[in-house]
Every structure is written in structure tokens, then in C-alpha cells.
Length: 181
Ligand SMILES: [Zn+2]
Image (cartoon, rainbow, N blue to C red; front, top):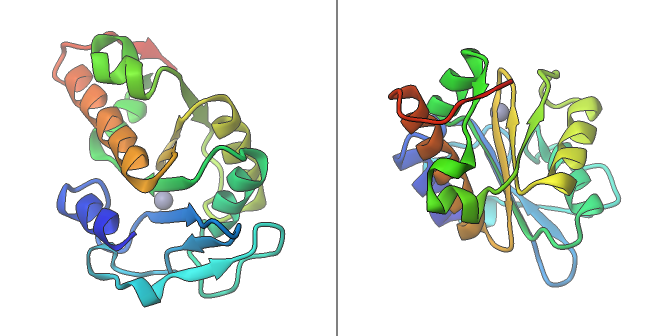
């Protein structure tokens, strides 16, 4: 989580304290990044332990509710990243989402991309919508907010965030295959 948080920060896929990460441990505990942490400078002991069927402790990320909802609904998901990828946000503000079909990596990693409407951050409604989206697809674009990507581990979730951003960048450059929202 420390290494992936640092990669997200270094690559500009989140601003300093933005975004959140989580992973499911073998014993079923969910580790979530702490609320308001600078993701490029975390340490392992900062992570907050959450039980999937209990409300997250107050020190956990403000979006911990959404992470737990996804883990409850999707037993195969072992890691989640919520990021604010700039090209994805720019494209969705223009009313478009990237098509995975323009890149081999897109088709392999994010064959389906779900859309989550603009819903208040940290709300139960957003958590519910994220849970439903990740049941249908490994990646979701949260309108006016960012992206949520799942994986069998954090590196696969990071691959998905990165390919979403790449697809959106290609589309913004005028070379994509646009899918209107
Ligand atoms: Zn966010």
C-alpha cells in the first residue's frame, strides 16, 4: 500500500492527500489508508484495520465505506484504488468516457467500464453505487470525482488506473474512440 500510494502520487494520479487504497488480508480484515494521509509519504503502520461487516473506524479514509461495500459484494476483489486521474476527469467533464477498445491493454485490463453518477463523497449512497458498479466491471468512473479500480492485488488495481488514464489521454489528444456518457 505504501509503494502503490507513492506510485499514484508520483505519477500525478492523485493530489497529495487525495484518493484512497485498500486491500483484503488472508484473515478477512480490510486494510484501508488513513483519513487525510499524504499518499506519497505513508508508512505501513499508518494503515487502518477494518472489519468488512462493521462501520469503519473514524481514522479510516472518508471513502472506507465504499471500499467495504465493494468487498462485501465482490468476494474476488482483493484490492481497491480510488484515484483522481486528470485525463479521466477532463474527459468525463466533456461528457465522454474512454473506450477500452483502442488499446490491447484496455481490452485486457478494463474490458468494461461502469459509470457512477455524481454523488456526495463519503455517503452511503456513493458506497452503494460503487458496490454495484464493481460487481459489473473492474473499473468505474465516478462522475465529477475520479475513478475506482479493483484488482486481485494492488498492482493490478494500479495497472487499471493507469490504463484508464492512458485511454482518456489518447481520447483527449483526438485519437480515441469516444463513448458518449
Ligand atoms: Zn476522491
